[in-house]
Amino acid sequence: MKVDSTGTIIWQNTIGGSSEDALSTLVIADGGCIVVGGKSYSENSGDKTSPHLGIGDNWILKINTNSNLINGKVFTDINLDTAYTTGENTIDGLKITESTTGRFSFTNAYGNYSLAIFDTGQYLISPSANIPYYNPNPLVHTASFTGLLQSDSLNDFAYQPAGNFDDLCMSISPVGAFRPGFNGNFMLNYKNVGTTTQNPDIVFHLYPNVSFVSASVPPSAVYPDSVVWNQVNFTPFQQRQILVTVNLNPSLPIGSILNSYAQIRPIDNDFNPSCNNATWEVTVTGSLDPNDIIVNQDTVFSTVFPNPPFLEYLIRFQNTGTDTAFTIKILNPLDTFKLDLNTLEFVAASIPWICVSFITSAAWNFCSTTFSFQIAM
Image (cartoon, rainbow, N blue to C red; front, side):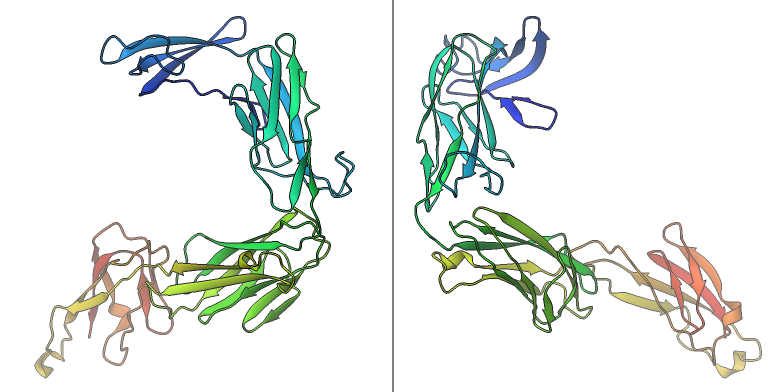
């Protein structure tokens, strides 16, 4: 395929036969041609003009990039004048096919399409999918070329409403991981696939163990069990999205199922209410780090108290959970009535240690995996 500087496909071509073909070498030649080479295992079929003679034959092709272009736009023609005007929404992702060659293209985010043709003559172009509640005008376009490097740009398809139909649709997608005590994100995508302009409400329901933090679009109201956005002037084939950030309860068990539910209203007169509700279940992931602490003497006799001994402690922890532990803090309270905090000494660690710090509560934290220390009684 060939794309322009914005990534829009200018032309594309599929080359091959009935079996496996692998083109691995490409050379840009003079005169607007591309030479490609590789292996072919196909018989006389498709673009192959002769059967293969060995297990895999060398195959070299020359592709003419001097194509003709059929261009156009696809849009919702609400005022029925067959011309694109400001306020009418374009239709993206729609397949456009040329009937003679079978070549096809898709409309981009702005409803534009470009279809390459590598020969002269007349070609018929039409949309390959039906859109509920709309009829394309015209059904077919004819493009004509008398040479190469020509462009036919008068091939717009105006989708005109077949009546008044209210139809709103909602989807929800989790973004990233969901971990106890951390924030998680949901993307709400909603679209007006009907033929009427509406003023819908978007509702994101909050389940237990989840609290609302923020949203990319300020909500109209926040309740204990839901967040609501009041939308206005939502025109046919317009689509919007909201990124919602929530916080998970730190006590939420790893492996538990977190439900999410979003809804677009009104539903009463909606022609297809089944797509007004969207749900998703995500599994709560996180690290699981069981800890233990071992001391080198489990019994100390009173006879040693005049010369208090050092006690050596070994603290071990590991991650046996389902996710990476990005933030680890090990706390070990010390009884300062029995142990002399001023004598604490770091002994060793299983990996290069990062930090040892003391806090006023006579607890300390250490950034490592397995380590030991000693302290006098």
